[in-house]
Structure formats: C-alpha cells, structure tokens
Image (cartoon, rainbow over all chains, first blue to last red; front, side):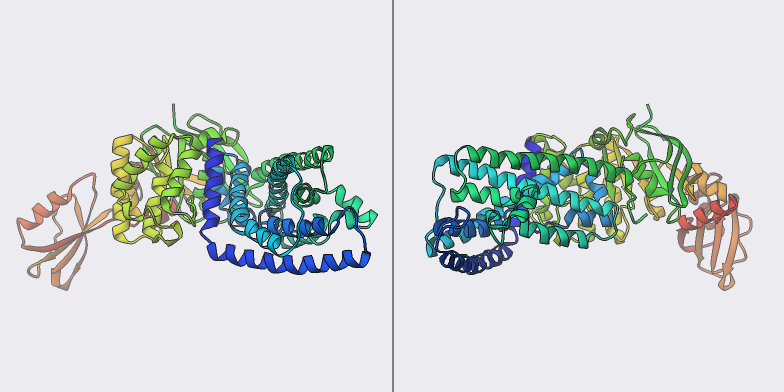
Length: 264
Length: 310
C-alpha cells in the first residue's frame, strides 16, 4: 500500500513538471467550456423547458464539470504501455516485484490528481464565475461525487490499459485506439448528456463502461442524481472498475506468456 | 545451492531456435562473463533467467526459484541492467527514482536513504541526484542504472552489455566500482559484453554461447589457451636487432624495421611478461613495450570455427 502511494506521488510529480502543458490544457478546457455552455443553453432556450432533468444551472454544471474532468479522467487514452510493449521496455516492468497494472494505475491516479488540481478545478472556477451553475446539493453529494470521480479515473485507466495491452498481439493499435476514443467520447456523455440521447443510443451507452467515466460523477456533482440513485450510479462504476481491472490482469498474464521482447 | 541452474533449456522463436539445450550452473559469489556474437542467444537466456520470457522447454532455476511462476520473488533477489533499456523515471530527478525503487522493493525510508548514499558516493553521482534522468549523459545514466539495480542488495546482479557506448574513462570507473562492490557484498555477477576488458577485469569464468549452444565453459586463460589465442608482447628496441627467436616460452611472430620492433606471442600459463622482458633486456636495450590482448571477437570466432560453425 505504501508502495502504491509512493507511485501515486511519483505520477503526480512527473506530470507536474510540465506546467506549460497544464496551463495550455486549462485554457483549452475553458474556451471549449464557454462554447459548449452557450450551445447547450441555446438548445434549452429553444426547448423552453428542462430536457431530461436538466434545467439551465444543471446544464451549466454538466458542461463545466465535464471540462474539469476531461483532463483528470484519461478519456482519450494513453500510449505509454503500448509503446513499452512495442519497444520491449515492458520487460523492465516485469523485473520489478510489483504488479505492472497496479504500478501504472498508481501513476495514472497521480496524473489525474495534478490534472484535477492544476487544470480542472481552475477551469471549473472560471465557469462558475461566468455562468449561473448548480452546485452539489449536500455534503453527501460532494463526498460521493469525489468517490465517483476517483472511480471514473480507475474505469478509464483500466479500459485503456486493456486496449494498450492489445499491442502484445497487434503490431499497430492506432485504429482500435481511435475507435475507442470516438465511441467513448460520445457514449461517456462528453458532448451531450446521456439522458438526452435517443432511446436506442442511451441503451447502448448504459450497457457500456463509458458513462462510468464521466456521466455518473457529473450527475452526482450537478445534483441531478441524488439519494438512493447515487448508490446505483456509484455501484455501476464499481462494477466496471472491478471488471476491467480483472480483464486487464487476465490479458496481462496472457501477454506475458506471449512476450517476445524485441531487440535481441 | 546454485544461484543459477539451467538444464536442457530451450527457447524457440517462430522458426529459429534461440537457445538450444543450454545446461550450466553458477554458484554464489562467482563472476561469470557470458559472451557470443549478436543473436547467439545471450539476452534470450537472461530473459528466461529473470522470468521475462517463457522457456519452450527445459529446466531453469534462479536463486532456487522458478522465474516464470515466482517472478516477484525472483525480482526481489535479483538486480538487472539491460544496457539499452532504462529502469529509471525519465522526467523525475534521479533521487526520486531511487526513492520509488526503494518503495517498490519494500525497503523502509532510512535504509533506502542509507543504501542510496553509499552507492551514490561510490559511483560519484552526488552532483547528479537533483538532475532529471533525461538530462544525464550516457555514462552518468549507466552508473545510475547499476546503482538502481543494486539498491535492494540483490544476491545476483545481471548486466546485459553495461559498458556499451561508454568512453574509456567511464568504463574504467564502472569496472572499478563493480570490483569493489563484489568484494564487499559478495554479489554474484552474470555479465554479457562485447568488451574483452569487461571480462578480464570482472570475471573469473567465461561462458561462450554459439547459435544458442554452450561452446565453452571455463576460465579466461583457459579460453585463450583452447583456441590458441595468445597474448602478444610488442617490444621496441634501441637498435636494429636480430630476431629474438630464443626467448623461453615465447615465439617470434613478426620483426619490423630491421628488428627495431619485434612481436612475441606467449602463453600466459607457461611464462609471464616479466620473465620474457627480463630475458630480452638482459641481452638488448628495450625502449618501449606494449601488450596486445586477444580480441574477444577473435576468440569467439575461433571457438565457432573450432566447433565447425561460424
């Protein structure tokens, strides 16, 4: 556990060395937040009423929490593990007395931490200053929202880790990564809230792990999901986090058996 | 108990057999050089010893453990440096890599610090501790890699081409450190290299691998003797001298410039440089001398030729 915590801290520090990237990310998130908020408010105004449980302040919360969590949750995936499989550096990971998946998860939690603090929360504050935004309605919402964000980071990591490991079998996984990004970006509720989807698409989304990466924490933090519903929202996330982590272990084990480290 | 033990170890890659019925064992405290041409199967063997690669068949034990099934336990007791891969955290100060590795090996902070201090002092890396790993020179990074591999005081240190690309001075410092470290800690060493200097200064036993097979197992002098690769003494004389044909234990190879420079080959087990030199200088005035060591590639080539391959 101490090892895990130290690896989290290392991930935090690693990513905090790139301050300019954090600033650039924050700026981009804010600009896009502004645009998205304007568009969704216009959609609400033309509808004349709340859509799918979203009134104006909840919609604003949806947008700005989304922008804040965009860099925190690794929605777009990472290439580090894939690259290490390809170059054979993954061998070094197997020379350590730790489980590689846990080591990378710890590093990703650290990365999420610095991105939340250095990039997400400043964007959120900016949004809150510019718009009338709904805040979590209770201490329970704040606390379960925090847990839900943590789980969202884990689900996104665990899913991407599995995708990365496909590099053991495929020479190039760019196509799969792209497919994951496009599907995930839509189904996680980044562009539009999942409750606004047509029925068929909402059904697909709800059977996928993607809403667990963004929609669920946002719903809790925006106060759209309260009371007992919080339990089921977080429960679904726990299910996906556990399933994808287990799947990752299975694939990692198979990959290790298959490993033919390149370069002699 | 042997620290490394392999019996009929085989590893196939698609159509080629990288390691072919390899059988050898290494006892605690030994320093073994593992040499052979590129693609001879050196790295493949190391990967099977450390649990990275699954053997196709055969038996392998490292520290008495099955590396594939007991990877974590093996990792706790073995330190490995792959010369061309890094185990350090690229964008963090060097100091942080040691702290993280200490935690990974479940060392408490005081002992991590103490061990880091010792290694950093011996490897003269104090000034680099605050530098990001990506900014280190190759020589500095390689010393850091070795310190990282030794942090948890492993019983077995495996170095895969640790001096590749290093300048003479960096190589020298690294070798001196390894000699001292082994003297103090009694660490077993398995080393692959293309550099004869590494073998000569660090190893008391040599394994030569050829096409995945063990072609030689013995001492370095024995190796040179087996293939007739002898050391050459180059003597520069003050005056043109007739051929030095009568030196005991040495044979004249070549005489240049009317005998101003003469090259004598000698068998290190039969005589010494000092004896040859004493014999020559009692009769002629010697201006300068150099010793040419057998070249590792040459030795390997001869071994291969002797075993009917190459």
